[in-house]
Amino acid sequence: MTSTDVSVSQNNLLFYDDFSNPRSGWSQWDGGQTQIAYQGGGLRFLIGEPHYDYWSLAGLEIKDAILAVEARVVGGPPNNDFGLICRYQGPDQFYAFVVSSDGYTGIVAVDGDGYHILTDSGLTYVASVDRGLSTYLLRADCVGSSLALYVDRQKLLEIEDHRYNSGDVGVFAGTFDETGVEVVFDNFYVLKP
Image (tube, rainbow, N blue to C red; front, side):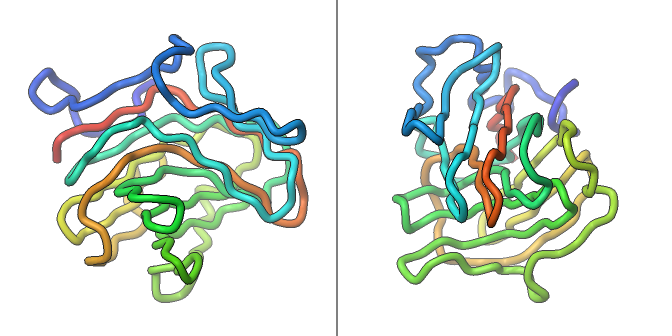
């Protein structure tokens, strides 16, 4: 299973990680209730705190790219969030491409004033995304000022934003009221647009 419908070749592949090597450089965390770790050939997030997002980054500096990953939700409530990050310049400067297992999606800009949902109507419900514990194929296009989110090869959202033009890339998972969200990421691609 590949997480992108863009063909992958030597000419357009900027970075790939299947998380089989625990020394490949992604940030890990063990805070007791919350853990991010390489496990079973994936990068596993277990979030044990309410209303909290955690992320892990690849350690790259990228301007324009197509990101893709497999996100397998293996535990916790469907009211969760997980997805891709691009143009990360610091904990208060990045874009997040958000999906939840209860069907909500969005593109978010994070800045010093918090999280700003860039889609006009807030988070958007998409019935085809609503399926609980499952594997989701996620894709985020960060090309110029154009940002697009795909889930399972279907383009769901596209917006324009000029806030950030380069930075690191990564994945994230988080909770709302209920804890125990568990997501395993695998096959992370960064491709030239």
